[in-house]
Amino acid sequence: MKKIRKAVIPAAGFGTRFLPQTKAMPKEMLPIVDKPVIQYVVEELVDAGITDIILVTGYHKRTIEDHFDAANLDLIENLRQGGEKKRPLLEAVERISKMANFIYVRQKGPYGNGTPLVNVRHLIGDEPFIYTFSDDFIVAKPSRFKQMLAVYEKYKAPVMGSIRARSEADYARYGFAGGDELGDGVIDVKVLIEKPGKENAPSDLATVSGSIFTPDIFNYLDQILENLGEGAEFYYNDALKLMLKDGKRILATEIKGGRYYDTGNKLEYMKTSIELALEHPEINGELRQFLKNLKL
Image 1 (cartoon, rainbow, N blue to C red):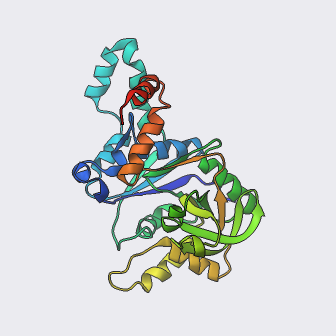
Image 2 (cartoon, one colour):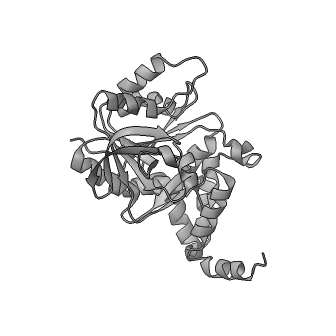
């Protein structure tokens, strides 16, 4: 079994929910205190042993490339002149570009989350890989990717990261997996339904937060793409359904002991920023006091 060392992050969207802020700044670069959202995702991947990170971007995402590139000499010299006081900042900035091998691909093709996958096929080859998004993540111990990798290593099959639905609204927001319980929060998937509503949901396990795919998914993506109608959206879930129809095994696993953060809309972004700021060692005390004194 090949070790998983590659991850793909689609990051070509326009971030229209955050306009006008995202007119010039990619939504992936929106800050959570002092780090952009996408860095949280990258750090978690690296911690799980991923060495090659492929970002599928668009023409307006140059700042993402700049962020994960080596810092410019002027900034480095400025921080060095700050002596010991700015040493932690210097180390943090220099560490970013050394975290992984970063590869950038420009997205081309129809709208939908299947397009970034077909764009990177030549880079993935015959290896299993992680496919995860740039605007949501789970804070958990062990991390979500470590939990998913453990399931993959045990069953040697694709794994969809999942969370338990917490409200009726979740059933109209996420896709859900149903199938045979294998134990410890793992489902042998038999059916995938997008936004089913609570009454039609096959389980309470919502498939969010990235997946581990095997390279055979590309053949099924080809089938979907070949039969895609004009103007239709291209989604990888349709390829997964074909895989299930062919008897391929796909698993969904609950990420245990974690808190799911979705920064894809204004309200959830603000909630994420506040929650993580309340855990930030530099500002958590003063921020907590500010919120207590705030008159609502």
